[in-house]
Image (tube, rainbow, N blue to C red):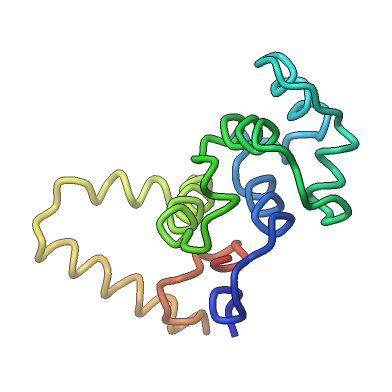
Length: 149
């Protein structure tokens, strides 16, 4: 059962997903200190410990200014933390995670400009390759991601 079917994701789940997904290519997640420093530079007082506590679910009632600071840092609307319907943002996060993989990015870029028939042929080949490798045929979780939140 996916997390979407299990119910709305918690603030900690959503923040964890952002940490796991939104980071510069070629390196690991942002540190709590990097996040807190960037938020403080925008004028909101926050500590790296508090960011960690929010991510781990130890604290779960941040101020709107904290949510806005986190949202701005990770490039999502503040409503991402509040709205139960985050499917569109989650899909964009999945795409971001998938495109971080150089071969996936290369295939996507090379497919740009193909006709609908050409794109359908590429999609059929990808689905066939996924089947051969025993990967799920659903379109919700690119390889290397945890699936939708």
